[in-house]
Amino acid sequence: MPSTIRADWRKETGPGNMPMPHDPPPTLGDFRHALETHQHLDHEDSQDCLNADGTWGPPGVGVQGGSGIAFGYACDDLGAVEVAVGAVRRRVDFYDGEHWIRQIRYAHAAWDMTHDPKYAREIVDYGTKAVTAFPIDGPVTDDDADVKANLAQYMHYAQKAPHTGLAHQFNGRLVGWYGYSRLMQMKVARTSSAWSKKLYDLCELAAIPGTGQIVTDTRNGIDQKGVQYGFQAAILIHTILCTCRRMGLPVPRWVANWMHAMYAMPVVDYYGGNSMPAFTYTDTDGTLKAATGPGQQADPGCCYWGHNCAILFLLTGSASWLEMANKFGPQTWGDEQSRRDSMLLRGVRQ
Image 1: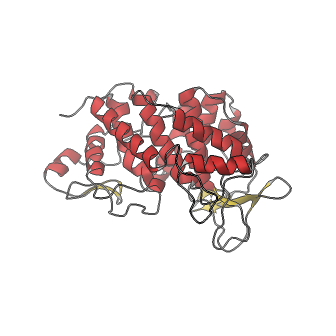
Image 2 (image 1 turned 60 degrees about the vertical axis):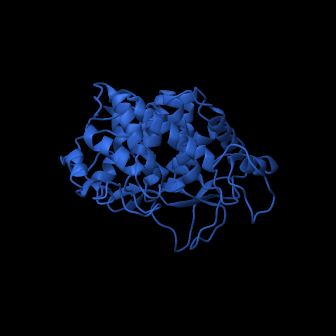
Image 3 (image 1 turned 90 degrees about the vertical axis):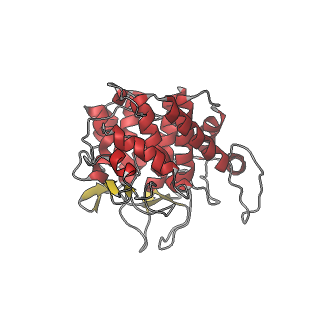
């Protein structure tokens, strides 16, 4: 039975309670009819699609690219969204942790649109799966060849060497999306906040002073060690900022430091858009530097700059964040990717 769309659903969407702009549907195709008649139908793009077998998207669990990577939803096409919720659930393999947002985004949108309990149940299930895959507690080791995937393991590293970042294969993108999923679970149901608070505390303890860098990694084709990949760091930061909105916590100083350090980076062209260097590192003088080497490139997500400027504006009330938003990333849309990447910024500016 189709649900009814709420007139004011755009006011507070997602785990960060973000306002959304009024965007037209990406297609006028009838997804309910396509599902019933076993048709293939593209939604936002060729990878964000209903398959003839009733599943959603390509079979790969970690397909590269920006398809389906979105921090909200801004269209009134509830029919497509409801079909997508069921079709994503019917996938043979769920999307992996680094792309978990593709698994959960339509359930989030459907609940915001309708407040139907069946979508709350979807969100609760996905949030539980997320924190089961990367739990709050678990075994801890000092064996770098056998690093455990849980928050306790990385808190152990941070306590041993505070404010030096997190190495040891810490995956900021995966943990960020899992945290985002858990926060939405907190929005729709009675849920413990312990996992989210521990991630908040972990980042506070690990952040490098001055630059706010959390992840310190190596990268093929990059000359330096201890580098971060900008858009992946930005996903983790967005989840921390949604945690602040959801739990009433103060914006960490390290987040502001990171944003200002990235703002000092040069503008790099990325398919006609204003991006920044993808790989940066905290130098011995305490400043953030663009990495060097043949692997350096423009950040493909523009560090989701507008999204984080938008939520920082809502958290602090400072218009300076909206002014800073002008330097990097899309401000409006000319295609589906730029539309998705400018949604939160357009939502707060409307």
